[in-house]
Length: 53
Image 1 (spheres, rainbow, N blue to C red):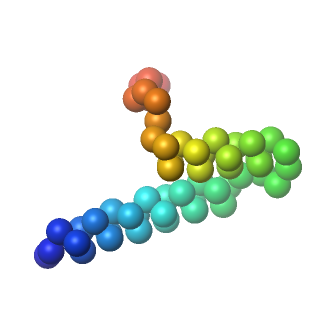
Image 2: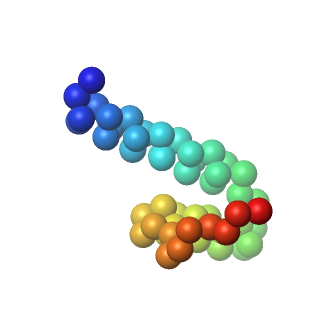
């Protein structure tokens, strides 16, 4: 497998994960805000690692 293929597969995996989260966002103002936060986190990265539960 070439590096180029691996990068494509990782990007596709991230896109599918993003879409699965957005699919569950409620169709109201709170859902719009949640979707915007999620998209922002995907494109800019998280400012810090999430705390474990």
